[in-house]
Image 1 (cartoon, rainbow, N blue to C red):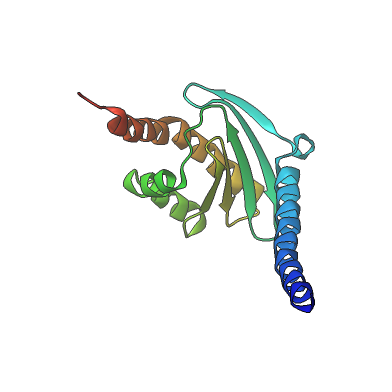
Image 2 (image 1 turned 90 degrees about the horizontal axis):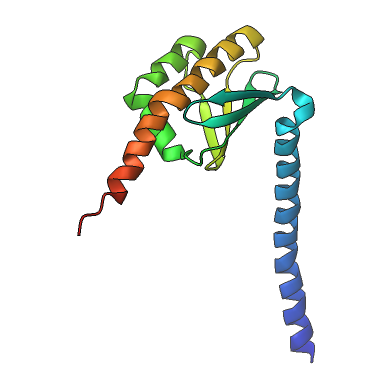
Length: 154
């Protein structure tokens, strides 16, 4: 009986870590949703390739995090990172900020694009170019990459 109580205590201690992680993830999700929220000045755009785009900004001390939601499920971090370099868009990032920005893809229809500036003029000018890039060059390349894997001939 004593051994069973010790094992149950160990299980309880191990599951506490999981509960703590779950609470942390919930807080992160709440913060992300706050950035995304309509009350933070969400802009809606209709673009030819990405469909409806919802864009909102979360201001930080030295950075701005843009939440970008699109209709077409085409966002992939590996493709974004690769195509920013191959298309020269990383050079645009360096011209604006002196370094590359940070993209995080949450879902194929949602990403957070963080720029290392809190200057509204610079940030809005950059994010406008970034969304245009996503809708044109990125969209074409990403569709081509996917099609190359689906072009099956029997």
